[in-house]
Length: 244
Image (cartoon, rainbow, N blue to C red; front, top):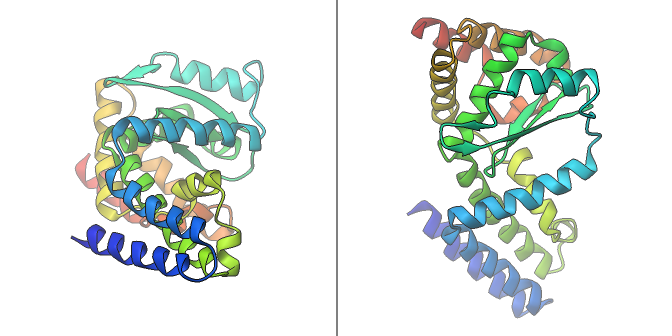
């Protein structure tokens, strides 16, 4: 019901734009709002592939022959397919401590995170990111990103400055990863999935705790801006420890 109400509000905002400054953009906003509600799994994956191609061109990708590339290949060689998913992996050369996955099965690690984590901890992060894909959190994020796009285009249709920055489709897909908050429930579900992943493959489950403790330790240092959209890693580590 919440999504339906938001859809109606966005469509009304879009058509208000049609009557003022920019009819074409106003229609686009309304269509994006509708699209957000009706996205199919196939469309989510196609848009995710579009975004990841864009993201790979905008970031410095570590070569397969680099230290980072070889390490990631070693850690993921048995996980090109996992739990019915086809996966692919790359490393971005960036000091930011982060990793993310998109609905098409693309998983990206920043070199800053790989520098911080042990092999066991990288496997733990991998299991968590796969969980977001498997549990369809990425699909939900895509829908919310389109709702955000529709709202911004409504502003753009009325001549707002914000809208001028938000009409790019790739910018919309970028919002999927940067602006959409993950709920405590979603993070808990993915943390539970990571434990099942580690157990299934005989990996060190304690790494699920230590990886989050490391994130909590440096969270105040300004290197973990992505955690603004995540629940507290310290509390998540305590929750996993209790389950272990």
